[in-house]
Image 1 (cartoon, one colour):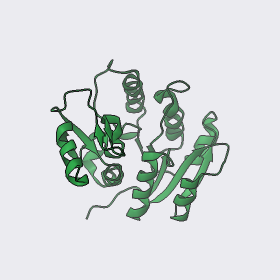
Image 2 (image 1 turned 90 degrees about the horizontal axis):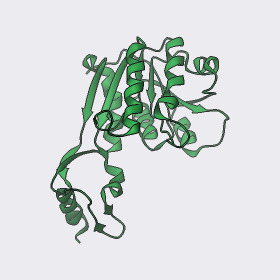
Image 3 (image 1 turned 90 degrees about the vertical axis):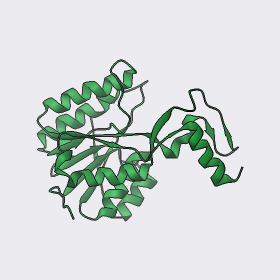
Amino acid sequence: MRHSPFKTVTIAGGTGNLGYVIAEAFLNDGSYNVKILRKKPEKENEKAKLLASKGAEIIYADYSQNDDLVKAIKGADVIVSAVNSDPKTESFYNSQAPLLAAAKDASVKRFIPSEFTGRFKSGDHFIIDDKDKFREELEKSGLEYTYIEVGIFQEFFDWLGFDIKNKKATFYVDANEKIPTTSLNDIGKYTVENLKIPEARNARINIAGSFLSLNEYLEIFEKASGE
């Protein structure tokens, strides 16, 4: 059984859809001190309460103040960024850049950025370009890093045209083309496991739970529902 050289993991965005699952996976593993980094001002959050009840420490910082961020994450071996961004107000790059600067100053060893998507070419979308820009900064920082690339989240199949409630499907692309999908739980588990694998240092990890066409996923839904 492999063991991780890291002890303390701080998760930014740990109360979001994916971040919460990643936080639970680290807590369930039992090998780490888990901290959930939230933005000031402090406010009530049910997911934060649940994670605290399971052993996580909830910490707060003002992302606009480097000293405050450094103080909050001091002692962390690993930063896992599961932050999201609203393109109307803040880019993916700007949502993570303060965290990276503070991680350097706090002597964090490894930074796992908010990738958690498939691999796309630069220029395909402004969010992809934003992530490319952040990766360049991360690789110049001197910190270790791991990029975790995944398929479309299986819990959000409505994005693919599946209306599960009304048992209907409408596809807008070639329904015979195979696409990767990954469950949030698997992403959480592999995020934990990658810290135990030496080969994950300064590398990409690809996680796909299934690689099927939309028509094949539709057949699975029909078998499961009987309709």
